[in-house]
Length: 477
Image (cartoon, rainbow, N blue to C red; front, side, top):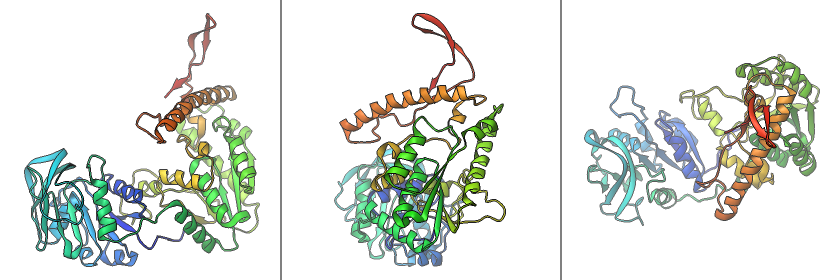
């Protein structure tokens, strides 16, 4: 997908661990678009992106370690406001002429900061407040032009700033919930210092994405592999909003979806959204393919390979298709080596949306969700009119119930597991719905987030109607 980054956005430098993703999400919670960039991006590359603000994340390393994550010091000369957290404060200090030392006693957990004088980012927060610390190194001498704006009993520079250059930093972590006024600190930086507007809302996002898809696609046709999962369903709704019947969805039914899901796909997309939908009934072919297979990895491979065979057998029969839309989301990009975050991140897992194009077949990709986190995808789906029962479903593996059947997949086992899983979900969905009605929160601390049934490859003794039975047990996770 062409880069359709909003005009105002925050570049989050990721110095390690999972801090970058967390900060990016906190910024987006305030309706400002953020994007993770590699920490060693050059100042020239960054300037070309034209960020409205920069946040330097924390990280587990020492700034003096041989393999410490580094950054281009010229970033501080771009005139873009910068806010650093933890390691971000330390590297800011070192790059601008300050010093960082190894403290005798680190701080790990809650701490109380004491404000010192005026601070633009601490404005409106108490003189004493609880923050979350996680460090052994700390700034010992601030760079020229900086003032110390808060301390703790063991950290002489809990925060610092050079207001004239719009450079700010904290040793603590405003992005975590344990920092009592962390959200206020972020708001001060984004809205008071940087002058940004909280306009990254779902309505605006939909308008921008629809316009971008129309510009990219023009009069061409688009095909989408609709699995029935959340990501592909949201992409289908979004792309159809943009180009209508230029989109054709191909739903490959392998017979291993949860009970009622194929019917829901038909109901939502064919009847409610009027999306051109080709329903491929491949249940019998998959049953033969999996006969006698017990290894879970073999199941995955066979199901995945057959899926694309089924899909492309349909796709090659359609005329004039130029684009393939798919539901790649931001964590897919980050975890697979940061294809669009600069290619510097470590690979956590292979990208599950890689497409095995047959020889001689190629489509240009449309990935309109490739900078959305999962919760944002769900919110977008609701805004597009998808039913909540589809958008807020449990995470579900691509190979479906085949992975939740231990051993060989048979029609008998599938029927048992579909019924059992439906009962488990119905009961716990009802419990979660009652909590939602009481609290107004979809995912409160008391709600059940992930639950499903598993069918082991054994039989066990039980009691039914006061009589002994010897049937397959169900595991509820």
